[in-house]
Image (tube, rainbow, N blue to C red; front, top):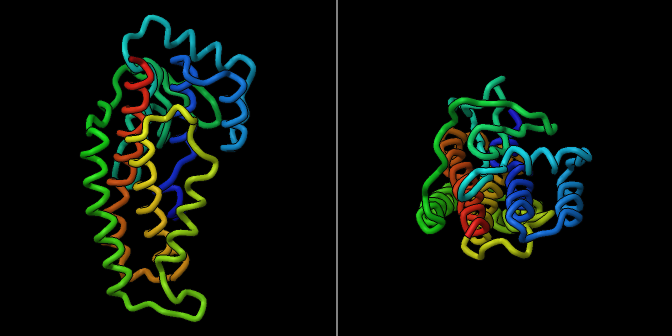
Length: 220
């Protein structure tokens, strides 16, 4: 199992950039550059298709869907993640359109509510690391590795127009993801898997809630 894929997706930042562009807060050139940095090419027709599918929609026109083990994304074709346009058109990697009659409702958590859940998750995960007593010459302090991985999750970054509350929430999600990767991948310690796996849903929910909040602010 690819643990990183369960706690991080470049679609998070890609969706924020798309929402910022669609609502007039970022340029098309900056969107294309950001997507390239995130590892996505941009077909010439894609942006026109997004505008066409969003036309006539009211309020926030973009949101993110993520799912994990034991969760159904609701996206036809078995896709685990996608960018939802106007609540029925789903853009899935690598930039194919899927049409859906019904999709799961957005995560209506406020950034503050999602951040509180992740704060509790962060404390729990850090306590699990400390309790494991893991130490080697290469990793005297697990929190140092957490910091290094947090830098990875934050690169490439979000648009300058991202609302500060959403940016804080994404940073919290990245930190919890880095803690989990530290324990499972870097330490090779699987004794805490069951506890850490339960935190994945908190991370995905926070990422979706953050994107929903961004789109709502951009659409004002």
